[in-house]
Structure formats: C-alpha cells, structure tokens
Image (cartoon, rainbow over all chains, first blue to last red; front, top):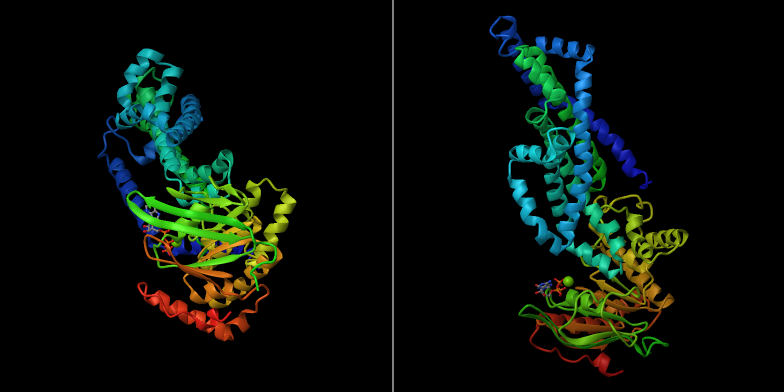
Length: 274
Length: 269
Ligand SMILES: Nc1ncnc2c1ncn2[C@@H]1O[C@H](COP(=O)(O)OP(=O)(O)OP(=O)(O)O)[C@@H](O)[C@H]1O
Ligand SMILES: [Mg+2]
C-alpha cells in the first residue's frame, strides 16, 4: 500500500497544482499587466506616436517576424548563431564540470588556478572580446571562445561549491562502511553536486546567449546579431527587432528546460504532501 | 550465569583511551573490554564523549592516548566487521529506503540477489516493509532511525556500535526492537556497544552497564546486570533486582558527585 503512495501523491499534487494555479491571483495579475503594457505600446504605434525609423510596435514586429521566417532569413541566421551557441556550451559544460570538481576536491589544483578563475569571474567578459579576437581571429573559433568564457564561469563556481559543501556526516558514513573512493563519488559526491550543477547550467545558458550576441556584434558579423543589425542600420526597426524577440523566446525556453531538469533531479527533496 | 558461553576473549579492547579536540579533553583513561557476544550499554550526561568514543572504536577518528584493538589487531581505520548506527541517522537523502538499507552490502560487493534478500529481511524486521520506495525526507524521524539500524544490521557485522539507536522511537516500537536486538544477538553472536539515555533500556539490554562522568568522559563505574541470554523483558521489569539497579542508577545520575549506596541485591550474588 505504502509502496505506491509516492506515485499516487504525485498525481494528486499535479491536479492540485493545476487547480491552485487557476485560483492563484498571480496569473491574472500577470495577464493584465501584459495586456496593459503590450496593448499600450501597440496603441502608441497605431496612433502614430512611434516613429518607425527609431522604434517599432508589437503588431509590426510580429508581421516582420513572420516575414523573416517565411523568407528563410531568420532560419538561416538562427542556424548560424546556434552553431557557436551549441559549440560553446558543448565545450563549456564538460570543461566547467571537470575544472569545478578538480578545484573542489584537490587543494593543490585549487590554489594553482583559483586566482585566474575568480579574477575572470569578476571581469566583464565583454572586455575580453578584443584580446580574444586578436589571438583567435574573428570567426567561428573566436566567437565560440567568447561563448565559452561567458558560460563556463557559473558552472565552475557552482560545481566547486557543490563539491565543497558535501555533507561531512555523510562523508563519515561512507568511511564507516569502508567505501572506496570511486564508490564515494557515486554515492555521495556526484549526487550532492547535481543540484548545484543544474543551477549553474541555468545561469550558463543565459550567459551563453549573451555571449553569442556579443560575439556576433563585436567580431565578424553573423547570424541573428547580423540580421538584427543590418535591418536597424537600414532603419527597418520592425525587422531589426524580430530577431531580438526570437532570442527572448530561446532564452525563456532554455530557462524552462533547466527548471524541469531541476525538479526532476531533486524529487528526493520534496516531502510528500498528503 | 556468564553473559556468553563461547566469548571470554574480548572482541574489542580499549586501553587507556584519551581524546582531545584541540585543547578540549573529551575522553580520559577509558579501559573497556567487550566480549564476543556481550552487550555493553553506556550511560552518561550529554556531551561527555559517548559519540566520540564510538567514532574512535569505529576507526573514524584517532585517539591521542591509548589504543583500540579488535580481535587483537590495532584498529587504525574503519573495517567491514564493524557497523555503526549513527545518532543523526546518516541516511543518503537521494537514495530510496531500500537503497539506503542495502548500502553497506553494495559497498561490500555482494550479489544483487543476496542484497535483495537481506534488505527485505531487515526492512521487515524493523517494521518498514512497504516503504522501500520512499526517500528519507518522506519518512518520519523514527522511521529514519529504524532505517539506519536496518542498514547496520544488514551488514551482519561482528561489532555493532549503536549511538542512541532508539532515541526517536515510540515506546511500543522501542520495546519490539529491544527484543529483536536481543534475539539477533543470541542468533548471531555480536559484540555490541549501545549508547542510551534511558536507564531502563540500559538495564534491559545490557549484559553490562557502564556509566561515564561529565567531560572529560571517564568511566565512573560499571556492573554486570546478570540477566543472561534468553531473558524475558517483562519478567525482568517486574523483578526486585531490576528495581534495585534502576534505583541505584537514578541516584547516580541525579548526583554526579556522590556515589550511591551499594546495591545489596548485586552484592549478594
Ligand atoms: N569534531 C569536534 N570538534 C570539536 N569538538 C568536538 C567535536 N566532536 C565533539 N566535540 C566535543 O566533544 C564533546 C563530546 O561530544 P560527543 O558528541 O562525543 O558527546 P555525546 O556524549 O555523544 O553527547 P550526546 O549525548 O549529546 O550525544 C562535546 O563537548 C563536543 O562539543
Ligand atoms: Mg552523542
């Protein structure tokens, strides 16, 4: 009976959540707020209070958005951008995890590298764009490197803290039962790091997106950054802002994915609600 | 009646154990022998070093003075023949109950079928059957404590070190588990050190009761309860001997400075 209790509780919690959300005033406040802001902005545009050369308004941006999608320009630009984004994240995530673990676990390694890591953490990465361009060029390698620099810091720092904050009394439990070092990683250290890592990944995704746009603006111009800048330079603000909307949507989607991972990996944290 | 028939050589021997944390002396001159099948219960005020003593016996921390030996070998680190029941339970929050209880067996590399068998046996024994799929956060404090006990029992150690293992339990569960523990000790000879704050529990379970002084923890006195194997807890409780020892211990705990009048019931044997 009690064996399937968690599953049963899961269902009720979900149903409850849906009902609670409908009752919740937060959603209505948000919807009204959106309606007022977007509606007001639209109204300003419709009544001719926005000069289309300097700014645009929602319906015009939406039309431009679909035009760019239909013409295939948005898709090819997004494809170009996503290459440096994905490559950057694929390098930053494993590298950040390894560096964070090494720093957290090996004191000598920590002392050897912590100066650079914390110095870089405190430096605005944008300032590194020019030195990176000088050394690695302004194309794929240079741009990917910028994304890596943006994304890797929160991963290193979070993983480091995760390894450092391992519960000492549980460490003693593993010692008491004669665990080997590799068993200790499996049973204790990796599971303790996961929540920190997931939080770090959330930050990393957001920063990688910033890094991508920065790279596209500051280095050889390409992808969504280029698309946006070209139209703005031509004073077609509606088309210039459409890629920005896409970036916003991607950013929100990435955050959501990370949130879902977060709840998935921390199911053991939740005390079952009756 | 002797407390065991086969175990006259001590399984555990502590000689002159002294422990400092920095400049704070926590233990001083502890000499203890625990025989193969003996249950030693330890009473002492909070902070007198009982947990510290168990950690030293387990080889988790070292003592500055004296030494601990297990079957004649000096203990210089944890060994699989010993298992600890931790005062704060020490369960892994991300492991399910069955995974927590089978933890020691997995560490020892036992076959999965063997692990499953032992886990289900000891899960039932501590009364947690049906909760295998729950995470510790979904269990009450008493249930977590029983899980910690089951984990140590499942490892089938020669030495069981128990740090207030029944502290969070209700009276009924506590009594059931006291009887189980006595039964296990009879079926599979184990040396047990059992820390408790309950005078009754110390007397009911202990072949020998040891009382410690406040910090630094020293041995204040110890005596054999003489109840023997196969004891009936109900019968013991009603007996004069139990009452006399109980009174003696109450007096001793109440006045840490003064030694109470000796017990005639004990002297007469
Ligand atoms: N790692 C440590 N560092 C410094 N002091 C410690 C450490 N562990 C324990 N102590 C001190 O040693 C003393 C004994 O602690 P211990 O946990 O052994 O007491 P205890 O007898 O188990 O108490 P309780 O009955 O409350 O569990 C306490 O004063 C405690 O503050
Ligand atoms: Mg203690």
